[in-house]
Length: 398
Image 1 (cartoon, rainbow, N blue to C red):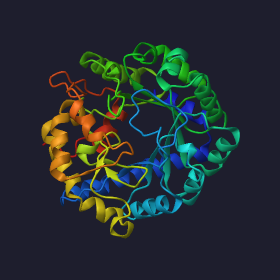
Image 2 (image 1 turned 45 degrees about the horizontal axis):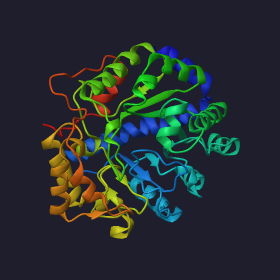
Image 3 (image 1 turned 135 degrees about the vertical axis):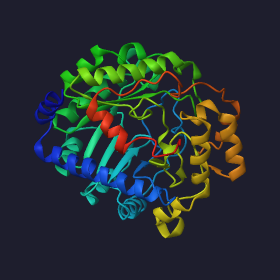
């Protein structure tokens, strides 16, 4: 399987891009995690990976989206983004997840990539702004992987994403990305109306045929102003997702990512472990993208992100609360407890709509990826090894 995946990668991309990925994302990412593990032994938590929502602007109107896409766009300007990345680099960070809204609607996105050739960026995008000109520029830069969101077949995509012809337009973006030999992935928020179509062997085969090198499956979170809880997976479907990923990793020559389980199949929360936190389009530092409350901003302490995060009492308390409450998702399982935490820590609502606290109050508790006694251990040994040493509990649940 490893040999097949290697052959596919060499055919789909080019050696320069693959080596850049291996060095800036792979090797330096491992180094960043090792630094993180050393720091937490001293009780100091600074995440090795930061997810940055650079803009709230988007051309789609997806059901269940927590971003304020109907409000005037908020975005981090070039200077703020540059300062943030430089500050994080001082402490070993080299990999950054770039989110939105739609990141390609940010006017200086490519300038940020160009300013940091020694970093690697994963862009979560709907793919509709991936023109030949943009993809050619990304290939020239060589430090970006495109992760294109596909949320269902043609009918479901139009219904779910609030615009016509979304599926075909996203596929055109995917084809453009692949044609320019970018390391291309596909992301899916698995929910009730796409699990039957996209969590299938046939869909993986189609993506392999199209030149996609990896997929990322994550579970739908019913949060935001229009949470659509009817789309949330049932507990047995969450286990179905986990079982599918474990089984397909052994059989299909495509990378399959699932970020909410460790090597033994126990659930985990990246924010609870401290391995990742989120920066909003206003610079607010949030535990994760769907918990839209903060008590600090990237502009604090003169822009020293390390000092701000490591001294943030609310992040420390969130990690403790989340890890001692569940190995799963606290916002799904205990929205009441999260609301109490927000009030106790006097955190600010970071949304433009300013209704996030009221939304928490109306949320009904539901299951997440934490299913004690039903753990499905990882079987594909390279992925199990990677999970064990570079993306697991880090003692958070001990």
